[in-house]
Image (cartoon, rainbow, N blue to C red; front, side, top):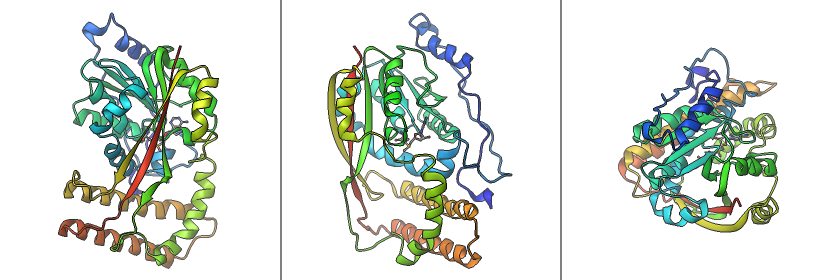
Amino acid sequence: MWLSIAFPVVQPSPCTAPALRRELIAWYSERARKSLPQVTMRQGAKAHCSAPPRIDDPSTVWSTWVQSVEWIDPIREQRFRDEVRDLLWPVLGLRRGGVAVDVGCGGGAVTRALARWMGPGSKVVGTDRDVNFLHYARRRAKEERLGRRLRYLQGDALDLPLPDNFADAMTSYTVLGHISDTKRFLTEKMRVCRPGGRVSVLEVRGKAGLASSPRRSGRPSAREQELWRPLEKVWRKSVDEPWRVASAEVGLAELPDLFEQLGLVEVMLESFSSVNTLEDARITPGEALRHLSAQERWLLAQVDRSAALLKRPLPPRHLSSLRRCIKTRYEKLRRWVRDGVHTWDFSVSLSLAVSGRKP
Ligand SMILES: C[S@@+](CC[C@H](N)C(=O)[O-])C[C@H]1O[C@@H](n2cnc3c(N)ncnc32)[C@H](O)[C@@H]1O
């Protein structure tokens, strides 16, 4: 059963070893610039699928239980298109050839955007505790030939594997909302930021967005929703609550004030919106089909994973009906893409950026 999951369990890799920290410092230091050490990309551990994925392992929890990297990363690519570069440049404190860190980088879409924007000679470090996300991010960096500018490190956002005063820009996108200690998250970012650099937090406001009510809906039917209910319930209790998924301690509107209280100066605010739809003309049918297949794989895996958490197993008929609903729906969605049929199923999300300069 576990062979079918989208993100196989991997053994945690010791990515934050002291040697790597030294390597990073050397990578950044002016003296070393002439002979930039080419660090071998760490590929993450090999997958093994002999046991059900563990729910208590921070190095795999996100990719196994919370979000599919193949699902989230293309959405982030849509949001961090080159069109938003000029808007975000001052608020993030970017500079050409500079150094930036993206904390909780996930699949790396933001880090790749930063590396493109800051250009040759720039250094961007993505950190995350989830090895599967990092593995994906490294692969994508290589594919986009951005490997020289990008490094990915495993580490907790509250204890970053980076030296003091390391970066010009310290950012994060949709991470603060999952962190239990907001102040520590910010002060840790301030530690790694150099004096004069910028610390920023970017978050998305789902409720401030806009969602369409499409005539042709590819959304779950009432029957499918009903079948999901017991699984969602057990997932919320076993994953959502213990891992504090989307349970921010501090509201977005309070952030600028908090930035000032922590000693950051010249606090700035910016916002940008994005249309999330697979029918965006910039997305090819091939990409849309890949995206749909990734979603379907993730949902089918969620059925199995969540069912295994239940104390009283559901009747096999329940699970097979749910799988059938998912497969039928995604088959329909793929047919529409292949036939060029638009559903106009989209949402608009609003992202907010708050930043302050470290004196
Ligand atoms: C909603 S995802 C956002 C990923 C990425 N920033 C993006 O927008 O595509 C949240 C990310 O934060 C990471 N994360 C959550 N808590 C963390 C922590 N305490 N330390 C490091 N990473 C964390 C998760 O592994 C996940 O990759």
